[in-house]
Each structure stands twice: as structure tokens, then as C-alpha cells.
Length: 302
Image (cartoon, rainbow, N blue to C red; front, side, top):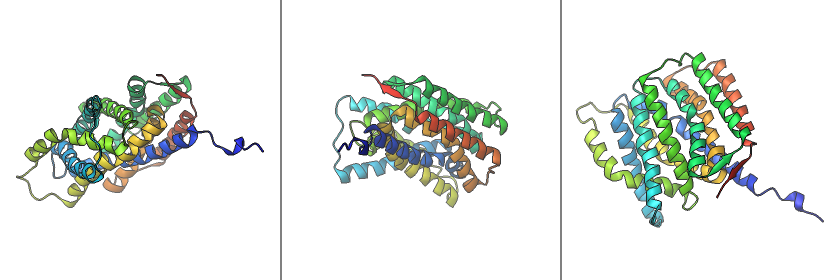
């Protein structure tokens, strides 16, 4: 009896698991901007960016020690340093500064360009070659996010937008490099070593930038800081890097198209920013484009 019809195609379970893990990571990331705004009630933007990395770095040392993880070798350190520049320094510093000047929903919209940037980084760093169909739906998804921002009145140009666009470039580089590393080490080890290698900078900078002369931080500011340190900078990367490594940088990176709308939900719950039917409608359209892009072939060259 031919049982070939009972066996699923090997790539599909891996890809589906990668997309699920990617979605979990994006869900964690989507709260970053509202949580940063809460943290800004009591902390400065540079302390938030570097202090969160220092706190996450201590957690990383603890986990690496308890699990007796092997020390990276050779050119792995170079790749870890590149990932660290992107996701430990560049993205947190730029977004923390920008959130002083624009609301969370505006920031979430600008970061809607991150999926295309991540796909481009996957082409450059991971030698992925998405098909024309993939680029078509990826561009349609990004254009949808931009049109949505214009309709929501977020179309004005702000100086902070330059910082957010630079943050997109840093994040895309860090994501693609981390995914590459996660193919040769465990995904959680990738972000752990990226945080540890940054500690000689983030720890003294965090101690220096702490606002000693201000009153005791508010509870909401303290919780916001803890979130960006332990979830945004640390735990979310466990799922995110694993998802990118399993499903591919370009394909799983399209989950980032959903981040602006998840940010709207987080901003509604944490900051009271309103959600309307227009937001829901555009979110459904983006989900459609993500689903279509998932079906598009992506090949990987040597």
C-alpha cells in the first residue's frame, strides 16, 4: 500500500513552526513602543536603551552559566558583534529617542517598513532569493501600512522619522545576522551572546545615565522599563531568531507587517489610544497580503 500520501512535505512543518514562532516574537516586540513611552515618565531615552540591554545582559550571563553553553569560536564573534550593533545598540537607542517626539501609533507605522528591509537583509546576508510574487505582496503590504498612516493623520514628517528609519536598517541587519547565527547555535544563545558582548558598554553607560536626582520612578515607568528589558530585548528574541532560522528571514520577516496593528492594540490597552474600524479593516488587508506572500517561493543560493 502506497503511504506516500500520508507523509507531509518536509519543509512545511518547519516553515509553519517558523511562522508561528515569528508571530510570537512580533507580538512581544509590538508592545515595545507603548512600554517605552511608559518608561519615559521617569527615565531618559538613553538610559532606557542602554539600561535595558544591561539588565538583559545579566539575565543572559545567568542563563549561559546555568546551561553551561559553549563559548563561540572564530568568526562567530564577528557575526555576534554585528547582531549586537543592530538589536542591542542601534534599534533601542534610536527608537527610545524617537518616542519622545511621536506617539506610539506613529512610530509603529514607520516601523511597518521593517519587513521589506528585513527581506533585503536576508538577500544580502543569508543569500535568500525571494520570487517576484513574494516582493509583489511584500510591497503591497508595506504600501498598505503607509496609506493607513496617511489616513490616520500620521503622514507629517518628523525629525524622529529619520531616527526610526535608521532604526529599521539596524534592526533588519541584526535580525538577518541573528538568524544566520541561529543556524549554527541555539536561538536563545544568539541573543544571549549578543547581550553579553555588549555589557562592557551597556553596564557602565546604564549606571552613568540612571536618573539619580529624580524622584522614585512611577510604577508604570518601572513596569515599562522591565518589559523592554526582559521581553523586548531578551525573551522575544528566543522565538524570533528561532522562527527566522526555521522559516527563512524573508518569509518569517513578513510577520513584521502585523506589528503596527499589534502596536495599536497595545497602545489602546496601555495608553488609551483609540482603535477604529479603519484600523481593523487595514489590519485584515495586511493579513491577506502576508498569507499570499507565504505561498510565494523563496530559494536560497549557496
